[in-house]
Image 1: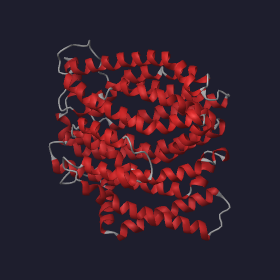
Image 2: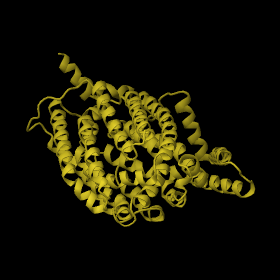
Image 3: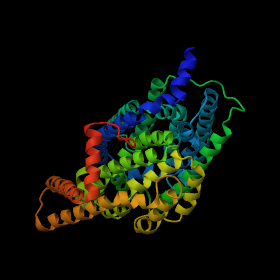
Image 4: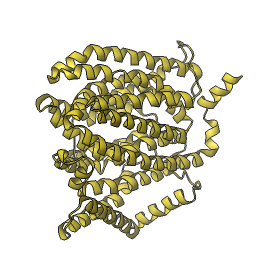
Length: 488
């Protein structure tokens, strides 16, 4: 009887439908608070580590990550999304998927140990052999956590997941800082990552009381494997597209260049990554439950994305306008060469928050095959202006071919924020030209105030902007479900 109740607790979703508006609203609020806390910890920890370690330390880890991130895609096989998206699942199916993930993780661990000398040979640095072997242990932690974490997301346990993510990240940074302080060098980054994965795996097992049974054949996992396979194919092709630059930099210019390039990208992506992951965890389960209700689906998506862009686009704009000050404050003078790289990446970064959500649409609508097709279109196009001019319009058209979200909806959503970004950037540049700034802290703080004020003024002037701010005020002020959809 107890096992039956547990299966209903983690597998069924009918009990979520009557309260899905409130759950999504609370989940959105939790995600925003979690974002702020994680962002603050990340900035402080990054600043400390950047002063204790060197660009070469980061470069060595970045070079290994090209290989480890590649094989890690096969650990999941997209099966977590299959668990979240399916309207009905069974204990036998999830138990079978759990063991598939574990076996794949073990196989990848062994594979990476065998490939480690090859990684060192390719880059011409013997240190990469041991780094690759130790880093690969993290695959086992990840494989053990896939299905438990997916079940928690399926049940919209957003507060628990956000709390766990924050605790795991904080623990990992503390491990990294302690080791770096003791002079461990690049090993501080290796064991920080292992600490993150281990803490997360332990946490999801404590939060999710479901325990896997033995794997079985003929329990209906074939369609789930196909769904996950299409997502893995998408991730595989997308991986080559995004990491070819790291491979070439490492091969011909060495760890110093990779470290500078990666750190610029990581710093720029902080506003987007810290909010995209928790909101994806909220949005994909909620949108999946609404896939058969087009109007509610569209209303939920629009409200979520408005908040994503309000929290990310002004931040990216501010970072572009103050790149030199930001690099000096957060990373230190030894990273000053990242400034120009940072600004160039920012062009594509402004559109990235909206572009990321196209994946939410495809997954929640069960369009995994479309994700694979898109990856083939996406692969030849890399960064900055090419993405803005060519790739993003194609992506918005592709995602809007089916379902309640149309091509024009993407541009209607982003237009007021882009206009606010342009005026904010011009205002910050004017401030820098007209006012002598002796302190980077003062300059960054003043620019932040200018960016916030300009964004609010532009949104208040525009009718669409006023509607967005009013809806956000209702969402987080009253936390009441809207009549026609979901307040998120």
